[in-house]
Amino acid sequence: MARSSRTDVAVLGALSVQPMSGYAVRAAITETLGHFWSESFGQIYPALARLEAAGLVRAAADGRTSGRVFEITDDGLARLRTMLAEPDEPAPPRNGLLLRLFFGRLLGPDVCRDLVRDVRVRAEASLATYAALRREVEAEPDAGNRAYFLVTVAAGEHGARAQLAWADEALTLLAAVDDRDPH
Amino acid sequence: MARSSRTDVAVLGALSVQPMSGYAVRAAITETLGHFWSESFGQIYPALARLEAAGLVRAAADGRTSGRVFEITDDGLARLRTMLAEPDEPAPPRNGLLLRLFFGRLLGPDVCRDLVRDVRVRAEASLATYAALRREVEAEPDAGNRAYFLVTVAAGEHGARAQLAWADEALTLLAAVDDRDPH
DNA sequence: TCAGAACATATCTGCCAGATATCTACAACC
DNA sequence: GGTTGTAGATATCTGGCAGATATGTTCTGA
Image 1 (cartoon, rainbow over the protein chains, first blue to last red):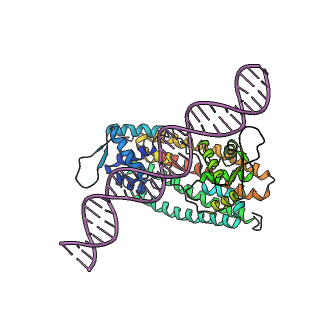
Image 2 (tube, chains in turn brown, orange, blue, red):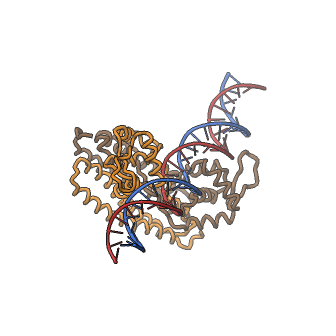
Image 3 (cartoon, chains in turn brown, purple, cyan, yellow):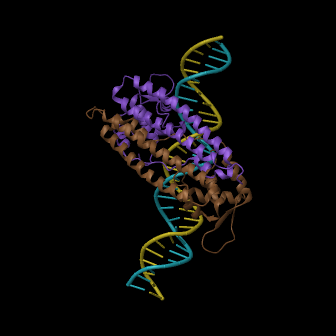
């Protein structure tokens, strides 16, 4: 996925499922891709305008509700396939939590332990969410996509379990730090 | 960590270790925080100018090489502590790999398996890097910071192991997908 | 002394999140 | 039958940030 508009990929992907308004695209992305992707309105509307100008998307015959409903064109579907096949450029790492823990001595071990415990709590919650999501996907009738969806759910599960295990190791490490260390 | 300039935190953090030029700050961040943080020059120089104007950083008595060497002021250290203590706002998820796998049916199972195998290879390499880093940190004399550094190394290790385990599960899931599925 | 490597600073483009400002449709409520 | 609230919908602006690029400087080794 080239650095160039990954938003376009997500929007085209959403419209490849069914025609939608910009508002609905955002809702679909939040709902369905929410555990590994996010988009803001500030991106979606310019993206739709761009894609429409390029003929990758067109406003569907207006059913005269409010809001324009867009559908993907054949060119758009071809472009989506191309973009999906581009090599992935992993984002540069930027983990605010680890940045703070690295300078943890300035914060003191107490605060650091709270930070880690907070991660632990959120990871537990994520696991529950993923368990529900997995049941949902496994019950879904669309067998052709099921394996792909499960792959993304599994990524979330493994990530959350890793956070749990890390949090426990981190708490052990921090337990050994003297609270009266000059920070 | 408020959304507002996390770059400032990283730069102040680097300068809290020792005075440095902008160029050296970038090098230090890449080298020392590289496995969980990154900065670009395009951020560092404006950040240094901002911080200097705010009195959080000052140009050290010039030893007359090229380049201005900055050191953190007392105000800067206080500000750093404050910023480190601010609540963490986790970045919105944006995982290009999972985005592609989610629409994997459009790509076909072969391409998807290649993507996953690639992750697996990189995760193996990461694990080796972290093992070396761990040995380095454990040998380091600075006992006061060692636990904090190890916490960040452990995060990388757990993350990489999770990727390995996920990749294996994903390959199993994708092995069951019929290659002749209409995509 | 000359070439090139490493050091150093600066700027510009484009992607993107988040906040905010409107506007419409519709239903519940009084 | 008007008011009010809520959800749907579109658009714009600010600021953080990565990556590329341009350019000058210092040092080292041939």
